[in-house]
Each structure stands twice: as structure tokens, then as C-alpha cells.
Length: 423
Image (tube, rainbow, N blue to C red; front, side, top):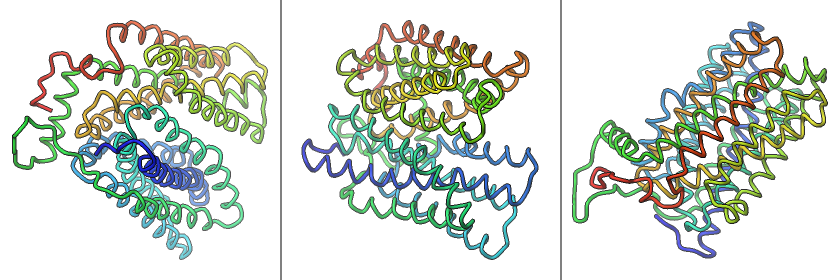
């Protein structure tokens, strides 16, 4: 359902952004509160680290399935149900904490359930964007969505989670449950039907298909679109190479820059500022230079940021360079998201997002593991940052050559010989 231009579309976008903001705030609180809760139950470093890895597991296991569901259901209702589910799980966890019945395995189970619901909520939110704004506003809407995530998780969620846990262990979980419930309630204001219509031949009245058939249909469609395949490959490679360094940020700050644990928070703050600046600048940059040029420049700036961090030992300059990376990666994310919305038919968007998230999020733990091995082999996190920076510059060059024959604005440029009846 494509929304008409004007005030109604703006109102619907703000209902969606308000819900997404509340959900991201709750998610940011939970991401801090869960590890803190785990440390009250165990000091086993493997179990603590495993909890962090659990947040990626649902995207690997259920990302594609969640995308298929988002293409079958009303996307607004899917978001409501996912947020209600997260609120209920956190509420039940809060009761167990109060009753003294917690164990580390229950924490794992809750994290897995919340992460599974997150695959549906985030996929549905992203797929809803083209339904609430016109095509000319996609860059702006995606930038606002990125800003909601940055503010909710970086600036508010983390500090609120740690501060409230220190005051009263139940407090952050009560806030998280309330935040997800609010995210669901705000979507009531997003009136209308948002169930995608299957893409069929004119006059065709095909019976409903099974989920696995629709998943295969989405994969076949993606296989026939070389531009989308290249975008997925570049996004996965970007995730892998950047995570080499990001996973080593704490060691870089504490060991190489000699910062204290308290001043390490400077990087998160500057990264958040950089991300907001990137979200604000992305639409203007695209209007001025076009998506392909902004995409290549953004990845190159990511490389310059991490490469520079690997070559210097001055904390303020390093923090500024990290802010440059954060701004650039947000710009890249906005370009990718808008290109997806432009190139992918609405009825297939959830499935394409499922493939995208599975590849990109699946690359994160692999990159983190390789980054740890690299730091151990090279003897310092700074050298890993230098290697990651050089690798990102290589990804920028690869992106330039991969996309120079394609348009990121015209669906026909990506479709090529695609058979539309298969969509």
C-alpha cells in the first residue's frame, strides 16, 4: 500500500518512527541489562560471551523465515504482535527475577525469544517504509529510521539500562517491557491495511501458496537480479571486514590508547554523534551526487576512519575518526536501504530483507572471530584496525567496479532478463 504524498503520509511515518523509537529504546536497555543480569548468575567468561553471541543467532536461524512471514502478513500487525511478544517475555523474566527463580539458561532462553521476535519487528518496520512515504521521500525516511535506532540504543538505552540496574535490578526490565508495549500501542495510530499483495500476472488468480514455496520464489527472484545480488555481497563483505576492528575496539581503547573503562564511553558517545550526523547528511549527499557515488565514498570513509585509528595513538583524534566511521556507515546503510526499497517489489521486500540480514548479521560473528585471531597474531588491536581500514578501502574499490554498469535508482537496471511472472 503506497501512501499518498502530503500530511497523511507524514503522520503515518511519524507513527511508525515513534513506535520504532520506543522499541529501539527498550532494545538498547535490554542489551545492557541482560549481560549485567548474567554476571549476577555466573562469572564464567564463556557463558557471558555466549549470551552476547545469542543476539545474532535468531537472524541466522529465522531471518529468512521472518522475511517470508512479513511478505504474507499485514506488516503493521506483525510489528504489533512481535512487540507484544517481547513485552510479555521481558515481563515474565521480571517476575522470575523478583521470585528468585532465575538461572543463566533462562536468561539465554529469554534472549533467544526476544531476538526471534526482533527479526519480525525489524523486518516489518523496514518493509513498511515504502508504504508510508512516496518514493521521493525514501532517503529522508530511512535516515530518520537510522536516527531512531542511534538515539534509542546508543544515547538513551545503554546509559538508562546501566543506571537503572545499579539502582534496582528489576528496574531496567520493567522499563524494557513497558517500552515494547508502548511500541505496540503506538502502531494503533498507523491506520490502514499493510498486507502486501502477491506479484502476479494481470488477471491471474492463483491459490495461496505455502511459506516454503514463497521463500523459494523470493530466492529465485533475487537470483535473477544481479544488482541486488551484488548489493548483498558488498553489504556482507563490508560487515565482515569492519567487524574485524569493531570487535577489538575495547582492547584498542584500553591497551593501545591507555584509556580507563570510564573514558571508553567516549567512543560510544562520539560514534552516536557521528551516526546522527550521517543520518542527517545522507539525503542531501544523495541529491547532490547520486547513490552510487555516495555509496563508494561512504565505504571509503569507513576505511579512512579505521585505517587512521590504526596509525595514531591520540585518544581525541581516534574518537573523531571513529565518529567518521560511524557517520559513513550510517550513510551507506541509508543508501542500501533506499536502493532496496526502490528496486524490490513490495510483495518481495520481506524475503529479500531476510536474505540480506542473514548474510550481513551472519558475517558479524565470523568477522569478530577473525579480528581476535588477527590481533593475537599481529600483537596489537591497532594493527587490526589498520588491516580493517585497508580492507574497507579495497571494498570501496570493488564496489565502484561492481556497480559502475548499474543504476541504483531504476528497477529495470537490476532486473535485466528477469521473468516477472516468477515474482
